[in-house]
Image (cartoon, rainbow over the protein chains, first blue to last red):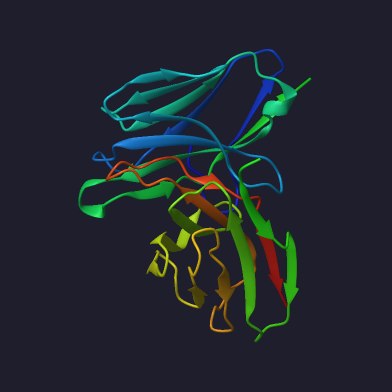
Length: 114
Length: 115
């Protein structure tokens, strides 16, 4: 989800469990969404994307779900591993009158316990 | 390997000095971007460029300047006019395919500390 101030929401999961990270986006006209993973001291790494004409997309161990009715995006990670520990954030593309403008959420910290 | 290289990784400057952050890409991407990341906040767009010798202001361009003399390079200068320059700066690039947006590929950032 979105953060408030300096503190990001944190999700702690046990290794091997599934993780679900949520994101509420702001613009009902957004037409494209991306999930990124950012490890400490590194740049964001692309995980998966989805266009607004879809409601689900699967990758390797990851699934993105899009619910346009409530403007909600989620990232599901199957069989979470210690290497999945990072900050995850979503981005929405403000299309239409904005041209193409990516707006980023602040992120959610995922901590994987061994 | 194709990618985006930002240098240096850490940069320290005294207040009042201009400083230039380097960004080079070998992905043959047309578009390049500079973002600023502060703790607990989403990435904020400083400048972007879709073609050589052209660039546009983002949401927080004040106190920054850029140039795009080559397709591969998009350096960012943080000037003394930037009131709060200490931050993590990220460079990104993307393909341009008509009006279709595509994912941004990011470098590993430069952490700038101004004292």
